[in-house]
Length: 72
Image (cartoon, rainbow, N blue to C red; front, side, top):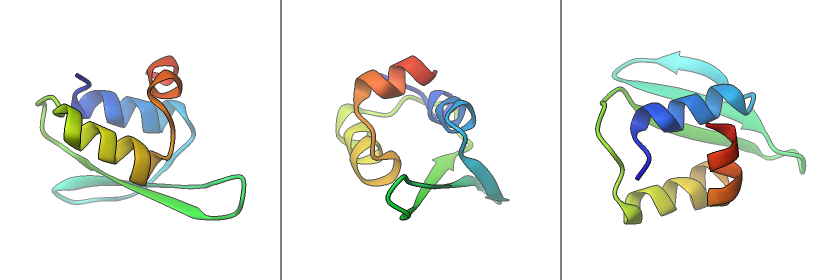
């Protein structure tokens, strides 16, 4: 399963803007339909379990696993 580092690498490679850094990284990106997507990425080094990773893909990044994998 992807780690938090992989999620961060995806955001950087896919053109997301790092707009805030506290105890997490906060990214944003405007989608093609004009909606602002936001992602909150832990600074931890652990892996994401399948349920959490699927939520991140669907609700925050709004991409499928294949697209995610080609960007990391």
